[in-house]
Image (cartoon, rainbow, N blue to C red; front, side):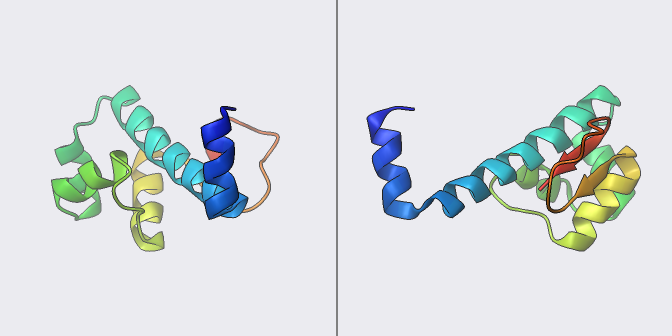
Length: 96
């Protein structure tokens, strides 16, 4: 890591940096999986009953989805999100 990043991490705390990394991984997984399945943001939004802008904000990392939204996305995309320790089974799972 760069010295600047180290100083930033010292200032805001490792837990904060870890949370940002988790949120970024979540956003990237949703976007990647949606694209892999050939769904547009609009199609995913329609499937979960949310506006397209919600999907765009989630994928851009601007907002973190509420649990009910996350569960709906996971169901539509047929993926599992788990909280806590990382699973040894990495197929279609993201650990937060």
